[in-house]
Amino acid sequence: MLYTVKEVSELSGVTIKTLHHYHKIGLLLPAEISEAGYRLYGSNELKRLQHILFYRELDFQLEQIKMLMEETPERSKMLLKQEKLLMDRVDRLGTILQTLRQSLTSTEEGISMEPKEMFRGFDSEEEWKEALTEHNHHLKEQYDVDMLENESVDVPSMNEQALEAAAFMAGMANALKTGIRHDDERIRDTIREHLQFMNEQGHTFTAADFAGQTKFFLNDDFHLRMLEEQQTGLAYYLQAAAEAYTNLA
Image (cartoon, rainbow, N blue to C red):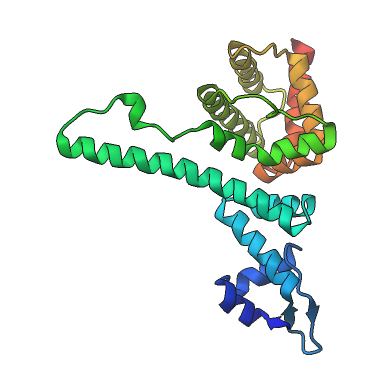
């Protein structure tokens, strides 16, 4: 049996506009298009849409969903993977709900909570692992590197490093956007502070290491796309800035 885009929209709750967008980006193609130009969907397309909605419920971006579905085309395996992701989310939300209820009880009874108890369930290790899923998948597939294998995540350290990295990249993107040259003294100071922060975190990160990292970003499609989505030309600007900094170091 085939369904029109309107019927699929009514069945799934997904708007017609969204279904058209999924077709446009190659995420959900119709089974066929009628002579009159109508998109028609079969049972396989409905199953694929269900997988897309499971992943959307988990807050995955469309590009991530497309990659994950290409990685695991078999339905049963994908359902098992999605079940685990959803159960992890349920467990985290259960912990947060427990924290909320404990906070409500403490407030009603006029009892102070221990500071640590107030934040139980937030910034969890599992949240970080979930956030790194796409990145880790790419590294495993392309370079046989698993950065999450048998390793726990130091949540406070990861939070701090993420904030610094975001601020650094935002600063570099803004410099590029406003026309500051890659070898400007302000850019050198920004890079110097970034390297200093990395070394204070226990990493040995030299100017040459930074230059090598930016070259890797430029030649790796995954990282290149991330940087270019933030600001067109950012990957190239970073590499030029790193090379200029290294030459003066």
